[in-house]
Amino acid sequence: MSQELDEQISQLQENTYRWVDLHGLVTCATLHFPNTEFDGPRCVSISFLGEGSYNTVYKLAFSNGTEVAASISCYDEDRFNPDGKRSEISTMSFVRESGLYPDVPVPKVLAFDLTFTNPACAPYVLMEVVPGITVDLEDEESDNADATSKLLARDLALVKALAKLQASLFKPVPFDEIGSLFTVTDGKYVVGPLMKMNQRSLDGPFKSIQDLWRLQLHDAMLFALQEWVNNETDNFPRKAFAQPPCTSQLFAELFQLLSSLIPHFQPPKSCMSLVLYHPDIALRNVLFDESSVSSNNPKITGVIDWGGAQILPVMFTARYPGDLTTELHSPFTRLGNPEESWRTVPCDWTSTGDISKWPQGMRYPPNGVPVPIDFGPQVRGKIRRFYLRAYFSACYAEQLHALHGIVDLACLTIFKDAPYYLKFHEVIGGGWKTWVEHETWIRETYWRLRMAGHGNKGSEDVVTGPNVYRESVEGPLCDLGISGEYPVPGY
Image: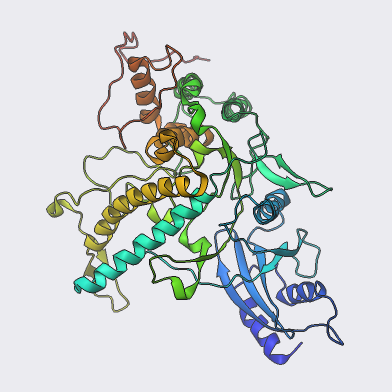
């Protein structure tokens, strides 16, 4: 090993996970190459390539001109789930080999070791280095109208490219179960347990989305039976500051409401086809040909980070790329907005509101002199994303027709119809804490569906509604607990 390579490793080792041995990683990568030279190819350099929430990636260059991307999991041995990584590797191979996704370039997996006993002391995956660069949507504002127009045109082109990418995955898969992909010993692809991006398994596979939801309710009740039968009061003990307050009665009520709502969130048949879902389509996970980025047709050269990919009904894949989402409480909470905050559905910022009522914020630079925060660029960025989402939806529909010949209006407007299905999926799968956080939404959804008579005639009416509930329509009840008490054992 050259002195230069040893110095590079020493510098990188300072910022990597404490259990990872980068000298060992170089050894592992070298052993995977055939001896094409007298003493085999030698690693001549190692550099940092990128980092996400779950992996760090290094680029290794060899004396024969080969470059390899080495991905190391951020999880230590106690938290690492090899099934999560096996599914990711299988999914990448399926996308490359199945022939279903000619417009979705994926790096080839060269080798992997999912143990902690290899010389790198950590699970690793070796892949082709994908040529290209990552880009971001432009939030910088310019006084030059021509420059602003070019930046916005570039953003529209990038959004259209993402829409085409997501539409390319709208292809029925040759499987009939909900779960994640795995490879068995004969190389055949099968659907196994449903994996999340954090490598957590949700069990399965499942014959229907309802089966998944029923299991999640079952697990929540099992947790209650194991954890709360010794509670001295009806108030659940708060084990963390962020844990929402809950009582036994509230848990039981929300459990029943969610169970009753399951039949109402069966998507219409046109949106039930099983497709492959990439859970983190975002510009940071898409590489573009650098020469085409400023054109009206940027070329995608690679799609990475397939961890947590799933086989799902298409209705539950209609999520906007992360670059287009906006949150209720960022950059500040707007007056008059209900307490609804979702991971899967963006909160629409469509106007600035009364600027004089914006909160006053300060930032403190190194010189210690506080400077007022100008929220204007951030707010305008949120509003721009509202319109970019509308453009994305239209481009997605256009590509469904261009790529797959789809003319079914239910499919072409799926991003308009999906939010309530995504919200229900998020709530029921989030566990009891998420139920409590979205108590108002659960109640309101229940009562609005009940008042509308949804499902009484067995129709397939799509469930839609406002971006957030601003008033209650809860039906009339004769609640005899007028003093607020509930029966609590006195012993």
